[in-house]
Length: 357
Image (cartoon, rainbow, N blue to C red):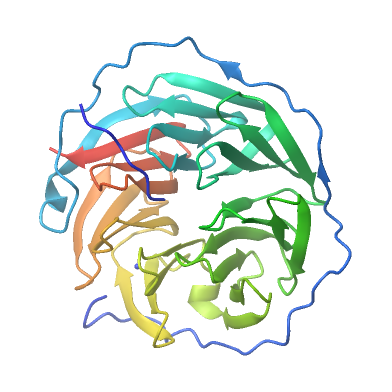
């Protein structure tokens, strides 16, 4: 039995459409009067599952690397779950699965159900506070809800005029970003809105903080991806074209690369320091809906509506292996921080666990 610890796209000769061109933007419009209010409303208490004695589920396995990627196989699955997003707790002991009507917490040791936090609608996204004691979730009924993981009690909730597609905590845990109609930065300690980042003309589907917490990347159905300064709210860059039409985004662990997965069946790797496309990874037969870097940053996983997961060598851009098993597109991917497991969530109502065999 082993313990799990949490963390949660480059080849010469890559070809395709031209590199996305960054377009300077005007100064961000800040909202001095918050329109989203944190309401200290008691939420339904979670349903706690009976305490069980954990039993080893997975045998000890190697970390997934570029050297053994061809030996990665499915090692377990959870079924009958309409999955929105998956996320490991910071200490790796719990797996949060956003579903239709609840956020389920599963013990990492044996995947038994620990708690279920109820909500009256589909949960699109879920995020752990870095301290691991609070869980935030955005849902179709326009709310961001917060729960105390240890007690199961609801803490508070935020309401927006449009459904909440995405939530993310900054690395210091002081700021929460969420996206719906706008992108909102929210102060965790005061429970007040810091600022509203305006510019997207359609619903925001993704918010991702850089590993150092200084930058925020947002993706929207207006087919643009935008980069913001977290401290000032100033817009720094806008991607249009294939990268702007992205449907998934992820920073490499060191923040040097930003990966975009999109409708043209490829993954774009953007060099943040050079400000240009570094490579384009091709191999999927469908749109790329999810991307995730391994903890060492040398491997990239991509999930597609071709029902497969691609494992790529980040340095060379080579597609090392394809993982099959899901019967629908892949909505969410997450590596365990020790790199031993890759977890995937799909619209086939399953969460699957992959490891070296």
